[in-house]
Image (cartoon, rainbow, N blue to C red; front, side, top):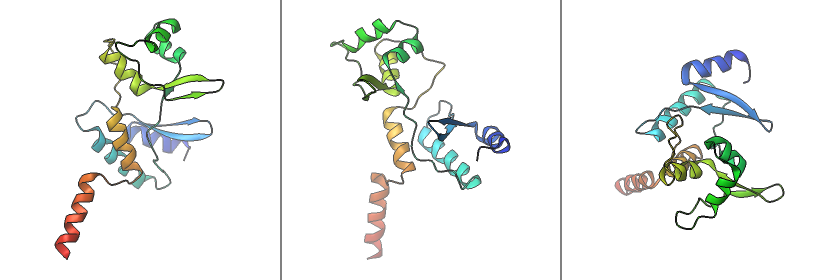
Length: 161
């Protein structure tokens, strides 16, 4: 799936790009700010997997960032970010995990939300789904039915009985 013709078609039709990280090829799907990102992603993934049956969409990529990554992305010092993590009045997001020799990492979505809501950073050039939207997209990709679908199936079974 990594040939140039495939990559061109993915980009031209869906604005999707292929990227490889740690020997895993990822499909990077860029979605503009939309009222219904979940449906937009679901429709795009359905179209892509119909055109390319070998594509398996598993989950939304977790963009994990360190103190240095955060500082670089927003143009402040690492020390400023470290101080933010210690605030008690407007708590910084909980760390996602630790890697290597205890280096803390955060999910960029949580940090992004905190920066735009608490610190009032202008991040107009970047649109990210919310945490709830990511969970819904991951559930869709994992084929986990939502509450409405479960209730609908239950009502259909009752009607047939």
